[in-house]
Length: 300
Ligand SMILES: *[C@@H]1O[C@H](CO)[C@@H](O)[C@H](O)[C@H]1NC(C)=O
Ligand SMILES: *[C@@H]1O[C@H](CO)[C@@H](O)[C@H](O)[C@H]1NC(C)=O
Image (spheres, rainbow, N blue to C red):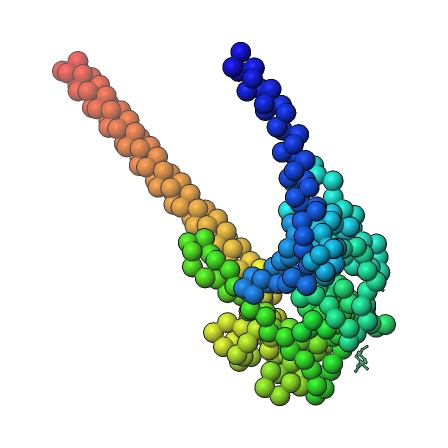
């Protein structure tokens, strides 16, 4: 009887709970003015959850409503199997808050941190595109630019430090320096703010940006990590020659060893036959001697 009563209470309470949590998420009062980036991790933050965005700046009338687009194939904050808002079609982008697709932004207009793909590509995007920009566009200090500055031209550099807490509670920081010089040929010299040529592997450097390989270690430009090791042709030839030489030496050595064994065996065999023939001769002589003795005795 008591269990039944508890079950009844649960059955009545469950829909109410679901309804109230839903209502809490969507009709929560908010202001889009509170949209911000976390100062340490630079993650997008707002008054609303990861599945919703704030409908406007006015706290009196604004509520959290379901997101209208997503920027990633697998967006953060949605449980497996939950219906996802759509991705944006080509030529548009989904802002961090997910408030619906918007057309790409021309150079000089605002963009969001680390969202180069919000900026419209330049006409010569094929020449300017590199791993350091998106289709030749780059978002620096929250403004869209084309990464088209060449040697000696003025450039803009954006240094962003991301802070996070590591597995054992220690602070982990990651500083990313980006600029609008044509990459990977040029980098923005931070002291003069002028594009300079990047340095080849093995040149002396102070920062990763100075190296064409984007990897400065112990004051020297080195190949980026995960570069396949390059073996010089001379080394390949030398290694092959050494291997062939070792094989030939082994064959020759074994042949000599075999020949020596055979010679020794032949010598033993010859000695054996000599011994046999001398023994035989000795026996024959013995016989002949005995026969001679017998004849002599008879004739006496
Ligand atoms: C770069 O832009 C061109 C022109 O808009 C477009 O055709 C191409 O697909 C873009 N590339 C990428 C990787 O988005
Ligand atoms: C670089 O792109 C900007 C924006 O499109 C343009 O105003 C500027 O003239 C370009 N500079 C060069 C050197 O092509």
